[in-house]
Image (cartoon, rainbow, N blue to C red; front, side):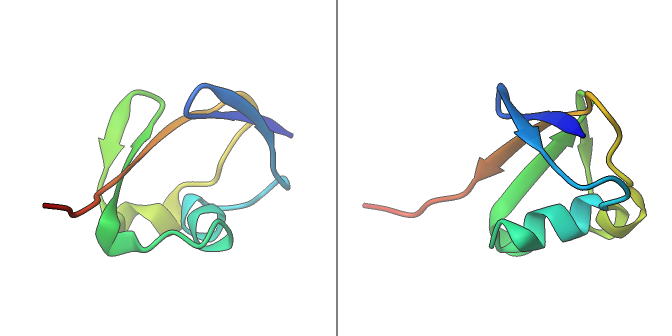
Length: 66
């Protein structure tokens, strides 16, 4: 199934949750903000969101520097 992640089409398995998708990508939950279909979702919601065809994700990573 196809979803859009940061503007690019991505293929994912049907039935995958947002939590599992991010875990598979190796993203640290404490260092990202996720927008699912134009709504920012809290970390606690991730396991309950099952991704659907054509869902739109924007993933922003926090980076430190100085």
